[in-house]
Length: 494
Image (cartoon, rainbow, N blue to C red; front, side):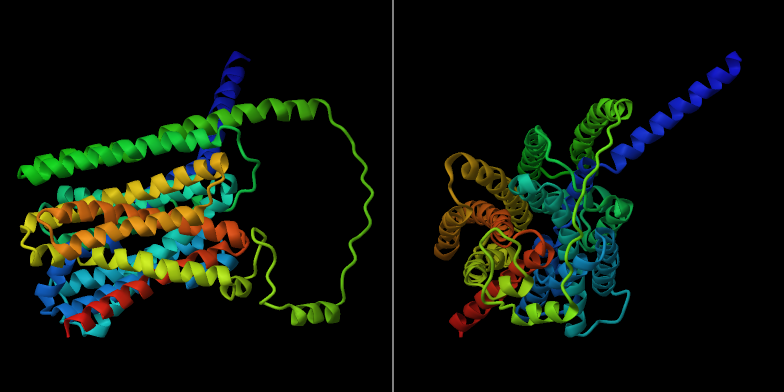
């Protein structure tokens, strides 16, 4: 009798532990943690300056061909309308599965070409490879970031700032990991970019889904805790970059710094587990009360009147895309695309994000032309990555506070960021000694700050119903602006 009771209690204990584990893994806070990891390795497009010289020397390209590759990379990284349309009709995990396939194929083929394991591809083939690999980033943003915004609609600014911030840090994170895995073999960086994001996306494939749940009272506090951890990670990366620039790191130092980076990356998991367990404990008493006092409610409702097919067809035909609903309501896709608001957003993003993106892509070339040492190129890219992160998180959290407390709209903040980015461009244009360090900081900060503001503005004006598609359409302006800036620079040198 005692044995049977003991066996039953052990079984019930195991069931409770397994149910708690399942509850944590299927909760929306664990989804946020998974999104943080995916975003932390999804910024390969911002590292083009590190491996572009290997492509140039290995394949014998000139600067104009390298600019064409850079443009193809920008198109792939920002034109994600297809991923948005796929996400409208499929679960988020389907989009993340496509991420793994596209990312591995694109960057693995580039690595094979650079290392000479395959015959030298044509230029159009290299453009196709880098476009496919970079386009996986837009799929990752759609599958992970858009899903989190829909699951936390009341904290969209904080969600966008935090997740986009980790994308900004991804350049520095991947750099530290690549040094730990492969030393100073810069060609191996392309291989790391090919397999690491795929592995992480595959592990968390079935974690992502839309969860309709009531907003928690302490929701924003949890995001602030994750924000503080990310600040610690950014500060640590900044210290490592400064030490790495001053002293020559060996393999042991690279492995040690990468290990601390991984610890800080997984630290939010403790917050997630604690929060999910507390949520389950708070739900149990309410469920027990509901079971102990069942109530029978009889509700009488009239069946909804269904319009005939001919009437619905007439309504669809009469619907005018040039007569959108009020701002904040759910726009249809064509209503949003043909609106004056989207036109203004597109032009502003083309001029702002496109210009800063061009400067970031050519930091290595700018540094060489201004006489900076080769070691400084890595420093510039890392500085851009870290300040890119700070711009994203500051813009996301600060805009949320300024909007709720002081009613300062996000479009006004977006304008201030565009004006501040002009200072960084002036530093580059005048070539003041050592000014490229300050220019990297300013341009990185402004480039990062524009993204959460842009995507929050789109969600606030056009609603969340078709946010997956509209989110990606807003990002299309970035490569358009980069192409215009590159063409303008070519015309000015003729």
